[in-house]
Image (cartoon, rainbow, N blue to C red):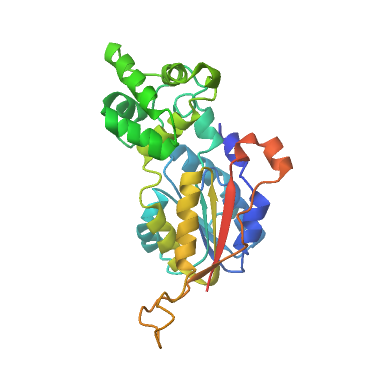
Length: 310
C-alpha cells in the first residue's frame, strides 16, 4: 500500500515555493510517505529534514522512501502541532522552510480497515489518523448527543441538512449500533431530498466526523503562527489545504502575521508594537494544474499558500 504515498500534490509548486537553500533545515509536519520530503532532500544535497506524522504506516513508508538520504533526516511519530517538543529533541532552533500538507493520504482512504471513505461499504467506522488514539468515528456517531452532532456536521462539514441527517442517525442507532461506513453513508443518503441523493452525498458528513475524531482544526491557527515565528529571515512556509475550513484558518493566520502597526493614524508614534512578520508569496493561492487534476482527482480541491519570513 505504500505506493499510494508517492503521489504528493503540487510537488513542483511546493519545491519552488520552499526556495530550498544549501545547508537549510526543513520541517515536513505531515510527511506521509515521504514524497515531498524526498524531493526536498534530492533538490539540495546539504539540506536536512525533520518530519512528523501521526500515522505509523506513513512513518514506516517515509523511512523506507528516504533511505537514500540516511543521516540527513529524522522522523517522529507525533502530531505536527507538537513541533516545539520535536524541535527540542532534534536540536533545531530556526528553520529555513516548513511544509504542511493538511490532506488525508490516498493510503488512508484506500485502506479498508481505516474507515475514511464513504465508498468503502464494509469498512469499520474508524477514521483515526493515529491508530493509537482512543476516539473513533464509531464513538462519535454512536455516542454523541443530538445537538453536538448537529454542530459538528454544520461546523466541520458545512452540511445544510445536518438536522435531518442527525435525527435519522439517532433513530437508526437506537435499533442497533452503526458500525460500518456503508451504513452511515446510507443513512445520510436517505436523509436528503431525493433529487440530491448520490454516492457522494455523504462526503460532508464523513469530513465532519473525521475532523472531529482527529481534532484537525484544533490549534491549527496557533500552530501556523508558531511555525512562522520559527523561520529564519527569508525562510518559507508552504501549506496545502483541501477544504474551505482549514484554508480559511491558514489564510487568516497569514493575514494577521503580515499586518504591521494597528495604531490609529492620529497617533504620533506606534504604541502597539506590532510589526509585519511575514509576507505572503503571491496575491492568491496556487491551484493544481488541469493535468494534475486529471491524473490525480484527489488534488482537485487543493490550495497552496506560501509566505516568507521578514
